[in-house]
Image (cartoon, rainbow, N blue to C red; front, side, top):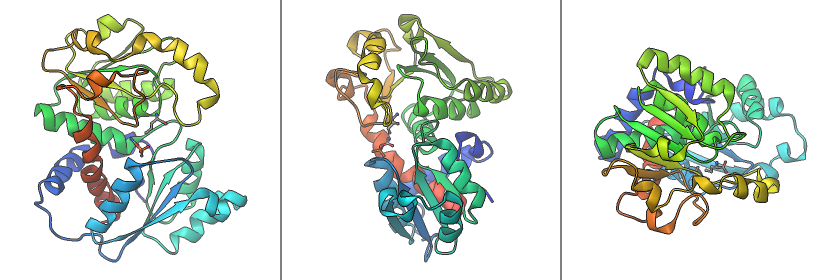
Length: 300
Ligand code: CP
Ligand code: NVA
């Protein structure tokens, strides 16, 4: 049974996902490969893009999405993950889960008879990462590039490191100490990078990290679940903002990405978010096309 729990799970499928998402985006696939199939979408946390892209994508592929807030399920009253997984497998053809704890998604997948897709956990956000790679390829027509991730080495950064390593892209993460990406994921990404030739680095030196870079990526400084650390985080990360001065150090044709939602004047300024080098709105749209390719891969 194939699942997408970590970005690493798609290491043999990444190029197919990119090319199929392109076909979906440009309307070259009119068939409904998921006709009469159902996807359960379990959300323990808020979502705009992930929910909409899975929901609309499922309709467009001929299938039926079910939005399930975890707090409305018996899961929210203490029903075991394993019992929920076994029962849900009898109704649907796939399950997408956005959960607080990555281990809960792994546990769910262990007992599921249908593919499970990670729609974001504290550790990873694989669907976002493949959208990001797709968007960079679309904007630049190559992935032989250097990307700088600025700020918190969070779930988005972790999956992005894995996905970038798979396609041979170089990545420098610019972050303060204590905000580095997950060490196990970084090690896994390095292993993949060894095969593809991509160079992965972590540094505290912002100026050096962005000098001549092709892509600047950032995400919120306070992720869902980190709210109690807000004031500490805003202080620790204040020198890692993506603003015009930072962008001026990058390659003149560099693009800026952000998975969204954005917090203006924290991790990014309004000027950059909506400036001429920003590709964030195309990136947001691309969640739909890439989600369709992912669902078709796992459920088609
Ligand atoms: N980027 C992303 O996953 O957005 P949502 O939290 O709105 O789903
Ligand atoms: N890192 C953010 C991403 C939101 C899409 C979070 O986990 O809240």
